[in-house]
Length: 365
Image 1 (tube, helix red, strand yellow):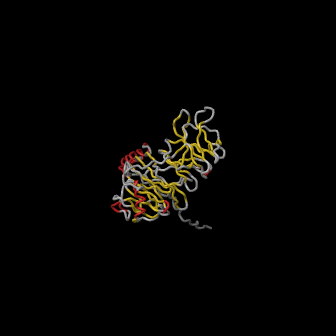
Image 2 (cartoon, rainbow, N blue to C red):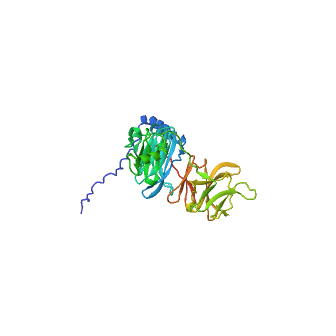
Image 3 (cartoon, rainbow, N blue to C red):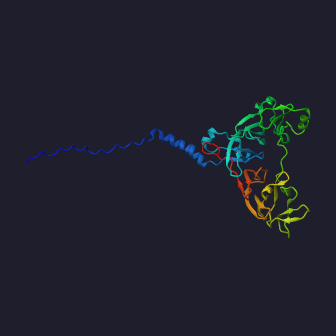
């Protein structure tokens, strides 16, 4: 018996999904893109980093429970065409750096002048105060932004003085002292931004300490051949090495005047790095020695020496003599030596602290 064949639905032909076309850069944009790449990318690749020189007027401050160093520095030059178009060729900046970790919390520009100095006078919980060649500058510790400066400081106004020697910190009374261009003396309480008159006796006292005459001020001695240890009763000193050996060795001078050798390392052209009259790093059981790298090399190096063992725990080559050294609340020492900003830590290390670094766009980090 004949049966009708079963009917099947026709099979749809297999279709390959269409390929997405990639959008190519229009040909007329290729030449400008190449030119931009060469001008901006190429110039950045072949340009050196700007010259960075630390200034000696740095100080410690507390930010979010961390002891940081507020360090002003000069930055000369730009890297690449983009920075040349958007950044000042000459800058003085202020960086907040944690010396324990090397982290830069913030970095802000203060000036675009070729020759311009800044010194951090004091820092409270909210503000830091700087004596600069443009007068008093108040910055916020949270981000480094300028809160008030020069004539913008309430109470000073147009009577402000541009000499750095016109400003000082009265540590005993926790206030900033300022001399006006007419010789008057005003005070600004720590963490305040308003200058107020002082009594006649205070004005007379500070009139002899402040000056509106422009000048660099008295340099601070950063080294010596003998210094007090942390307790103050004993001292550490450099003495001529025994046996006609060239160089100096470290000795510890006891209360009764005895000299006890601290290790046997001989240093050439050596000086002790000090903060005032005290050897830096003494609070952590060390002393820091500035010396020649060798008898035949007059280059400068810094060596950290353990007072307990006499061993050199770390050495850092620097480009010049120490300009200033300052011991922080936790015993870490911050110092400047020409272009070098460094820290001597309690774990026996001496490390460079990197400031002044910027990315392609000139943003500091």
